[in-house]
Amino acid sequence: MYRPPKVRPKNLTIGGRFFMAKYSCEFKKEVVNAYLNGEGGHRYLAEKYGI
Image 1 (cartoon, rainbow, N blue to C red):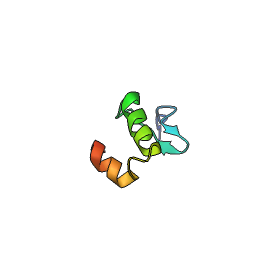
Image 2 (tube, rainbow, N blue to C red):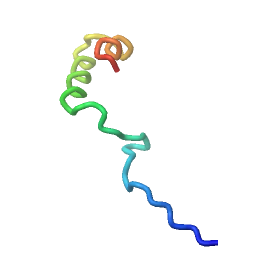
Image 3 (cartoon, helix red, strand yellow):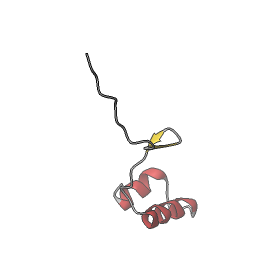
């Protein structure tokens, strides 16, 4: 029985985690900076930024 080869995108992971460009780079930087500046924990910031 002939089975065609599996075709997958080559690199969808970074550090073993699935990666998608759902949020812009600037938005990610804003959220990370807010966390690093002590504006709140991950749950608070997730709710604040709607993620």
